[in-house]
Structure formats: structure tokens, C-alpha cells
Length: 157
Image 1 (cartoon, helix red, strand yellow):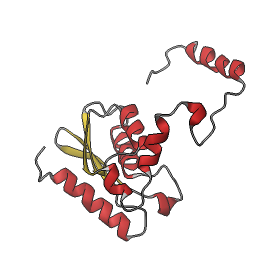
Image 2 (tube, one colour):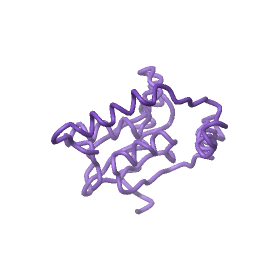
Image 3 (cartoon, one colour):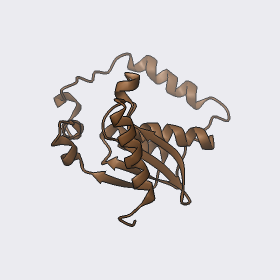
């Protein structure tokens, strides 16, 4: 990818617009398919009081809505910052094939973003993480798996 990507420039433009409007941090993203932007997003955590409204997630939601599909396997994402664990998960779930990013997680940490801490937590065993994760009602919950498996013609994802 060229260092003069119009897609990264658009992601930066979206990030700057949202950031200066007080919507959230310096994070913007575009989803691209066949050389065309099909989804755009920027961080709207503060605007929407929604901790999941990161630039990548809003761009993925926009793209999926526009193409009426939850798979973006033939797409790439251009994002101003290296994706946090949540955004990386959304990228994998959407099946996006490639990520281009501007600044790194370490760059973001230098101005106070704590993505590094979240990545550190995820590599720990569940019992050593700062947020406890406890199993509850496992037998009843497993019935949901059986019930779901029995639904005829269900769509996989």
C-alpha cells in the first residue's frame, strides 16, 4: 500500500472531524472493497456514551449496513490507529482480510490510551485477569447450544 493512500487520508479526515467535534479520540476508519470505500466511521464514544463506538466498529457497522451482509471477507480496513482488542475482534468476526493502520498501540499509550493494558490482560489466564470471569448456570446455558443447533436452515457465521 502506498504511503499516499487516499483511504488512510480519508480515515484521518474522519478522525480529525470527530475529534474536533468532541465525539471521541483520534480514531477514524474506512472499509474498502475493490478500491471503493463502502463504510466509514470515527470514534463516537463520548458523543454516544458508548464504549464500543470506536472508529473501526462504526466503519464496520456502516459497511455491513450498506452491503446488507455481516461478512466483509473481500474487504480491507484503513484505520488511523492500530486496532484495540475489541476492534481487532470485530475485524476478525467480520472476516476483513487486511488491516492498514497509522499510529501504533504504543504511540496511543504515550498520550494516555490504555490499549496496551487490555492486550496484556488478554494473554493472562482468566483467573489472573483484573476483571473476574466466573461460569454460572452452565447446564442451562448449554441447552441454548442444543436448541440453536436444532434450528433448521439457520445461517452460520
